[in-house]
Length: 459
Ligand SMILES: *Cc1c(COP(=O)(O)O)cnc(C)c1O
Image 1: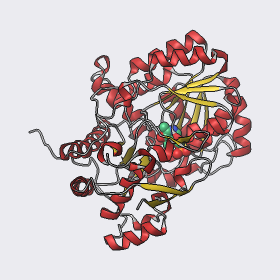
Image 2: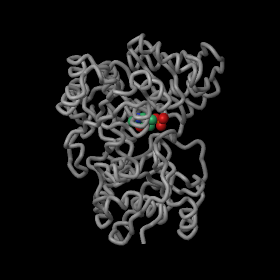
Image 3: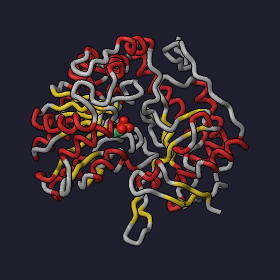
């Protein structure tokens, strides 16, 4: 018999209580946090969909690995296990442990970047862009036109636009390109997958112009599931084999293990080239730690080595992707404008379409984030002009291309009934969608303003 209910392919061995709150209490909490959900304590959140980063539940096997962690300063057994797991997966010889993705970005893009350099990606993730720009270089996004249309059904909306990529290389001069960075799946572009064909096309372009090709591979397992599902040549192929093939097309990769390595902290840089790796090692030792631990404990490295195997399990990946799709499809049926098709780790609401009466300079995404919290204690994340908006010379907002709100699903954490509660909340939101007022920013820092900016509701 074919079952419709998605069951979690695991049993729960250990639980963490959730504190319930009333709408009245949440009104007060939100006021104290100046309408920025990054500034709310987690105990005041009922369902936390702020991010899938570092929020995974580890398996019994990973917790057992935690006990086996070898905490030696140099040459720990846990490091060997992590290094070998990463080498096997990526095919790269030079592996560096880092405490999280952005630490690796800072190290790698300081080496490759600087004033006059240009990086090209499908979409640079926020910390990637910030690290590149902080070093004085420029970050250019080349997403396809399909990837910019939230409602369009198209299998690989994470693909980089190969023509735009080539034009950007020619315009800026191949010698000035620090690297092409392919982000799989494309987090800021809606968690949409990248096809193997696209990854191959990037290889050809990088060969033609002799440019370094890197994978930002945080969600490589989820991407591999989509490749097997949607790309004819890969149907029925093992997810891990697909990932290996994609890794081997690139010259290196950088991973925040807080995503598809199913751990709470960690990451790596993997490179084929010894010269670049050696130049990174200096900064690694100064900033992160010795080459055999980076910023990690032995136990973290042990858990990463195990997570990198578990994440490719076919039952896990099937549950992971179908349960995210379940949430997205139900919202779609309710008439909530969502980014189609549903990506791997999150459902993205098109807040500009949902709250069409709120102009972009009043941040419709931030308004929705606040409403979800008030109504149900759900924490979500704005990915629009608060996160990516720029300013012109006169301080006027240059809005982001899309005003999205991300409901990111932590791995192996919430059950289907938690997700049904979220769906119920949206049924209410949609009924009152013409009422909410927009937001204004009352304070903002220079970089990554979404983390600490303060907001007020427009009157
Ligand atoms: C999370 C993420 C990063 C940064 O990693 P952190 O561990 O949060 O520092 C970089 N790129 C992508 C695509 C990400 O999703």
